[in-house]
Image (cartoon, one colour):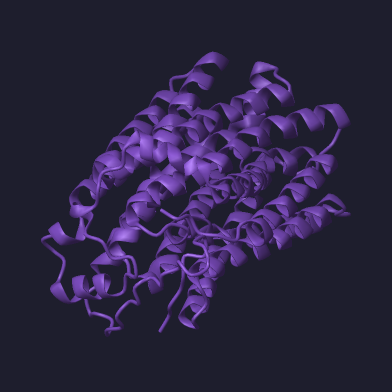
Length: 446
């Protein structure tokens, strides 16, 4: 049975967190159905994020723009997404998961459909800004739902399930987008993606409720959930988060270590999202169709790795390791391995080896993904801050994501190739490993 402490409190003032009760797993699994609909939302979300990068070479050719300008177009999504993580995390804690995710899914699906009618660079940029704003509540909301619906021993596995869905969406985006573009053209490709999003929204509206209010939840499963939560607190009784209280979170150094670590980690991820198809075509000589299919391989490997990484840290928790340390060390180890993979990719001697190493890099990166979000639930002592901390960390992450496409495009134009861009991504992964593994040592005293 695990007992852990809030390590940010002075010696002599630390209090052990309540020890979860251990009861048998229930035969009912509604909590996993909740994860199922979050998975569907996540896949549609990431289809919309990844489809523009597939069309980027064709857009560059049609509009006659440089790599640097395409980097600006690709980053138009990420900047507003990063900024909106701050208020949306607070909004999820303040107004609830169901409302915020419903509004978000409806808006990002509408934006996808409207993108099919875009005919200018300015329109593309405006719609990508709107997409970034609309998609920001997804992970703070999913994290809040997971923290409410799962006992501590299952949280990383549950989180990893929908984080793995990000890789599924990214793996599906290149071949699916390529097929749709070949059959119907890029406008209809965007429209079909938006329709899929509205289908996922309908499922969310039907299925999601808070556990205490869900008419389909069996009492055995409810008891299992509540008994396994060390920080158990009734959602309905939780105090509402005020803006002033939320702002005080930035006083804690641990928050800034997470922001910095997330910045560097997500830089690597968005290097893949923004430039992988173009890298395969321009640096390795693959055709558009070939690059579309090969671009799926890293994300397939990543989807498997997300599940492995979450299960690994859950096993550490079951063995008595402090959940906070289990999550942060898992992230740091994955980031270190990713740095090595990126450095090796920069030195790859042929197309096959480059694809293999890029696939390895996404695999090692993805070992961190479920723990990245679960850490936000472990670094605080009360549930009311979970979405806020998760969104603040992700704000830092998507600042890195916003820089990655632009910086990569500038580096390619300036130095004439992808090798310096790959080396820079490796350095970013090393910095992230240091932030989570060395600098971040204390929970927040909130």
